[in-house]
Length: 263
Image (cartoon, rainbow, N blue to C red; front, side, top):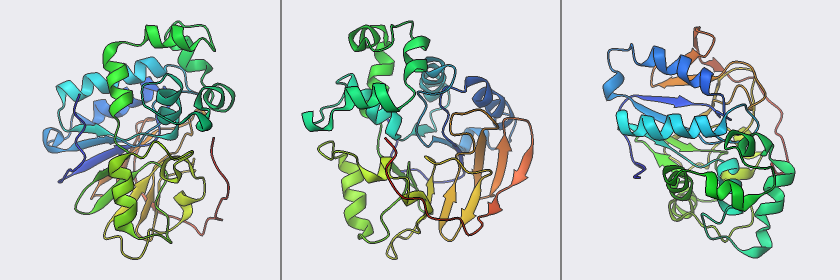
């Protein structure tokens, strides 16, 4: 399975899915009616798994979409990182202790249930994963680049050079205990570093509606807790919602910066 890491042209970017298969399907139905559907990239911003009703179904849907709509790609969220590390699909250091963290802090019960595995039995879940799901989880990029946009699950550090962060993201440095670009709860509310030439597009934290700030777009409107899933059309700044509405992306209010880590 090949993930495209460099894309160009029109994009439709989905907020965090968290097993909300029906909501994704409702949006895809509308996307497929667009005259430029075949030419439009579909990007999933991460967190397909955990919390919501059908994580396995979400992976089934996206892996199938990558076959039938080749202009589909995705990035890792902290939930895919935790799951893939806990199941040893990627090589992470022992001090990270991903197995216990994923079981204790990520709402992973729904992921086990969707695969028919007993919660907490990592070997049973590993055995239940189709090979294409293992390949998907093991190979997810940490970022996707576009001439105008930079897609990353949480955000970029405003105080570190963009080129350095981009290289770490391209390399997927699994030796980091909690890579901030996937896990930080504060980065979604930070502007990109000054030398970043892109608008940064992220999910990871739930916002009431899609928000557009200064060089910044936040797209997660459910947090996997129910509600209306959003898909943002770029460069149009139009939002297709899972409730059938089309709206304009709104300018972000002066949101307080949230601190801490999302486990």
